[in-house]
Image (tube, rainbow, N blue to C red; front, side, top):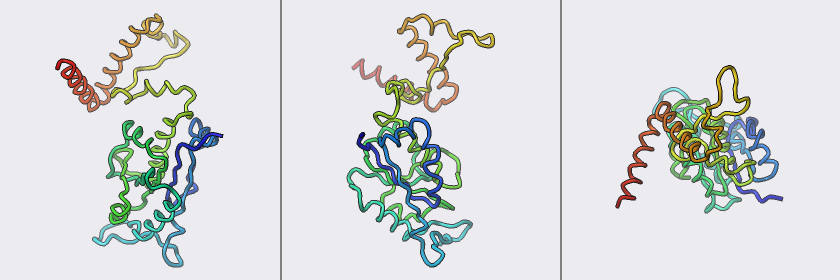
Amino acid sequence: MNKTKLSAKVITLYPELFPGPLSASVTGRALKKKIWSLETIDLRQYGRGIHKQVDDKPISGGPGMILRPDVLDEALLKTQSSIDDKSTLKICMSPKGIPLTQSLTKNLLQFKNLIIVCGRFEGIDQRVIEKHMLKEISIGDFILTGGELGAMVLLDAVVRLLPGTLGNSKSILTESFTNGLLEAPQFTKPIDWDGVRVPEILRTGDHQKILEWKTHTSEEVTKTNRPDLFIKYIEKKKKMVKRKGI
């Protein structure tokens, strides 16, 4: 039996949403093979009063409700009580967090335990974020109704990098963002489809020329679709050239 490489614990008001899409495809198979584990913690059980209240109005006024610090604190303390803090990272899915990137995803692999808090309403009390040193992470510049979908995205990105999850581990090496560029276009049979043929260079068997074509095409795709990434890529290349010249 495989030893679990990652333990994920998700604190949420909607535990029934999990595992959701994480139960399908490679992440689902990895879950069954115990390459990783998933546990949901129902935040409502830590609510206050007969109605199990988990939120309250913002002190400064304004619309919406804020998740209470005392409720989240109790849930976090209980959740982390049985795991090793040294190999644990506590995360809060938040639109004001740092962007989730492939580089950040790889860095998360150093942790054996991930505790993920899924925010709701207008957010969570800042005091509990600071007390537990929650790492705020965002999956994009948009607002969702809650952090659950963000948590699924994060876990999908991390789990697929775990050894044993993908059938062909080498496929990770050529994916978008791995070398700072977006991936080059992919083709398969039939060679001639709908009047369009697969580029001749890809059928030559000349690995060096194919690599050069893919690199050039990746640069063009990145330049068009993600100019921000292309600028970083060019700057990195200049630094490498300068370093070699010293």
